[in-house]
Image (tube, rainbow, N blue to C red; front, side, top):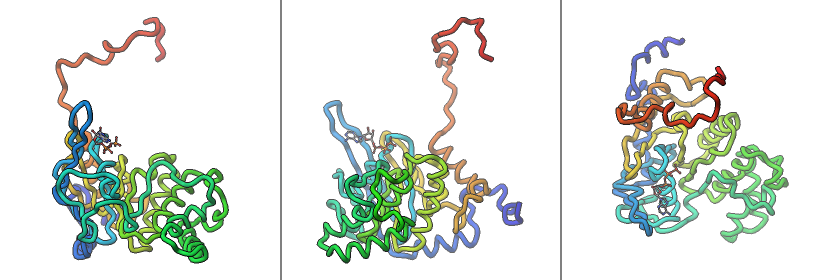
Length: 306
Ligand SMILES: Nc1ncnc2c1ncn2[C@@H]1O[C@H](COP(=O)(O)OP(=O)(O)OP(=O)(O)O)[C@@H](O)[C@H]1O
């Protein structure tokens, strides 16, 4: 344990080292890229109304990395779809560079959990697609696609087809394809959710490396507490039914991040706070039937597996 570790013992997630504090001061001085003000979303169905988002407020600064976390049904996907311009909303505002979001646009790149590559196009052709849709010549698109494939470390796979790639590689192509139009903001909805733990970990480090090297602001949806703390500057914590902001947490873990920090006092303190917000301890319900009594017996009582 280093002296710095020792000095952080007993601190909570609100305690920031001087370096972290200064970083947040710099970050908050940067221009606001995304501003969400009093945003509401109500879904109307035959069964009634669901308030998916209620009075959501937050700002994201240039080159900030924001994670959005919360229990199932808290409106994470709804929020990201509204920001992408794929979903309408019922009041409030969502502003990108001060302008209302009214539909999809080149200023936003999207990466989803499912692999959304065109299977009949090569890796490079997948990345070129967005550019060609914007009337950029094939030669120019090919040159730019090469640069982005280089950035995500897939230059050697330019002529491969999606089915020849691993899950992590497919998501790297998806990131290159989302970045090729040089959006202001990258919206990522559980992009690593389908990957195995080891690949997921590598992709997180890789994404931080990409983010460090380019001028991009990231809004990243996740279920995973470790992933949120590892990646984010700030974490927007939502609650469900209705989807509301519980807290916007400034992650006190210094940058650059590495897996060695997963058990640092700041990391664990932040995780404890997220656990308390997202999985609060339930009061014991005295009316609840003990689990053993609820289970059907499928085996003979004498057949003891232990
Ligand atoms: N198209 C829709 N029509 C009706 N209700 C919807 C629709 N999409 C989402 N909802 C409801 O809105 C609420 C928020 O859903 P949303 O999918 O945004 O949550 P989420 O936090 O992304 O959930 P998960 O983590 O399970 O993906 C939920 O109660 C959901 O049932």
